[in-house]
Length: 392
Image 1 (tube, rainbow, N blue to C red):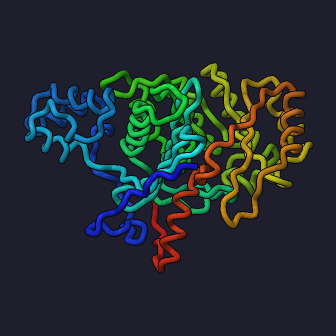
Image 2 (image 1 turned 90 degrees about the vertical axis):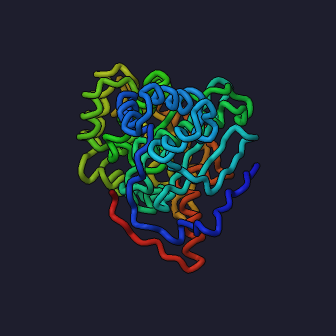
Image 3 (image 1 turned 180 degrees about the vertical axis):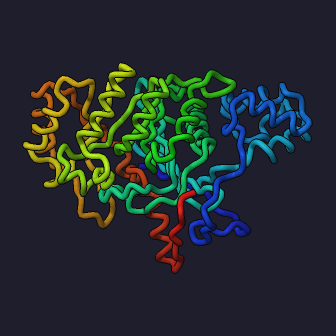
């Protein structure tokens, strides 16, 4: 494992983990706006409208996030645009790499001291960014590090997009070993429940998939949005007529267990959640990814594999089995490999396409929320108390 340097915090900016301000949304950023909105903002500053395309080309086309590097802009213009459209949204607290440089994780501090994480994963044929949509999470799944933290607030459109632009810049630098130098996929599987921050996540998707210079120019088919099963939002997503992949974090095929593992199931049961997922697949023609974290002696019994197979047989769905990445002090652990193989065998025997997710990033607390949880635990050990706040 390679551990990258921790980014020091200057003495006049005390550690935001220990001086947590009340959660608040960040100032406006150009990534919050479409191109027309940027033109309006730029002309409102007394600059010609073409400056909007200029700074957008830098940010989305060249992956430049620092206005000081936009040297084709007059200094006075750079100062005005920086103050109004390019505020610092993300400050790196810790960056780590493993898998010989193919997996890189960043812990970010937001302007109000909230913590979020993002991960860059390189493969021989692609580079994928896994990004957060909320600081913390309100879904309270007991085996998830983020769920144990609770929800601090939603992220803004630009806070989501800026994670991707930063990671795209890392990929472009050639830092991801053995992978192409272009980010090609984004998965909303970091901290938070994406569909609980619905308007901003959808706007971020549109920004990521709009052609440059309005956006990053990624394919909608290369974007994955996950959910624990917020049925009204899933049905709203159907109406968006996007072609993103929907990933449903199911984790149990029966209501008795899923009520415990995914508490939102107490509101929307397995049958209703799957109906919404299948309707999304029918509308879009896109195969739904069924996410299933295998937990030792909890949800890995052969009869549950058989039940899941019956629920999914003949449907446009693929099961993505996830070997659980245990969090420190947790009672939950990953299923043994023989149990995992039997689970896979039974699903495939039922005619359900099934794969086991690559276990990336265990050496660097790769599961979402683990770095943030460690940072908060460290701060608490030093005598700081993190106040419980209401999500904005």
